[in-house]
Length: 314
Picture 1 (tube, helix red, strand yellow):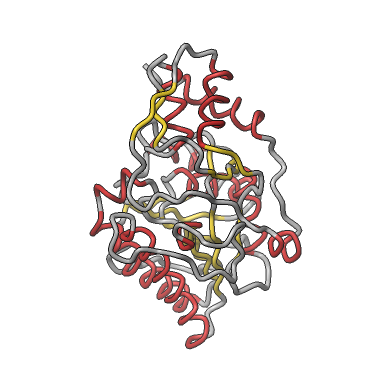
Picture 2 (picture 1 turned 90 degrees about the vertical axis):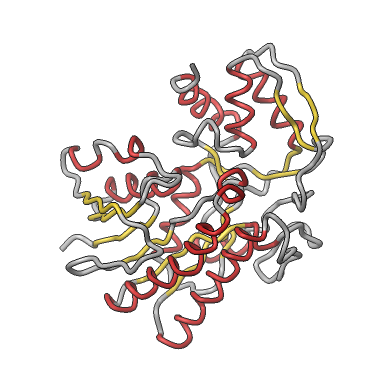
């Protein structure tokens, strides 16, 4: 019998790549999404490819989840994930992080399935520890504009561990650092898609602050490989997945302008409230426990992503 996996947020950027890779690895996949930030195009054709077994259910996971038949794994990937989205949808973001996670955990408990939840480097807030280890508790403003996402994910982690300790659900928590690749939306608002869409249109490229704040950029195929390794592991404590190569926002913007051959120039706008000044994962646990580290070099990943964005920019 093929192993059967339920993925919430399956039409999203990472969720759809997860679904596709798991289908390629001969799993059966049931995808759930309500298309608030997901895209039907991301899952189009998955059910029609030879040798694939994909079922889709349009559903808001903040409501009770019902899936007929056996389930071996539940991957909880439903949530707005960019600042533009979660600031436009603050209540929905809090609901999917709390009620959505509760419902997904309930499904995993009922089916005796392994549960994997997508957490985020945002649980570290604007960190006072650098690089960030999983043992760091974070520096988060609980009532700031970003708190609707940060605290939803922190609550989701707490709820996940409560189900693990109380109900003995086999749970996994992946703390995802900045990830990029095809299927990101043009208006996503995060650095790579924002810079690419502006550069490909030869528009001014907007950098917030002075551009000295740092991020670490992981190509999506590396991230998906790490998620699946964690899913199949015996680990229950949080694991960072990200690229430890740190670079400034200004440097990534300049790199994208150069690689697209754009005539764009950089312009600067004020830094948003509570925007982290630095972000780099300590991936010692991922290396040790999962045998994982990113393999795709930045230029290689950007070439693939630019090719995708050229097809989307009018």
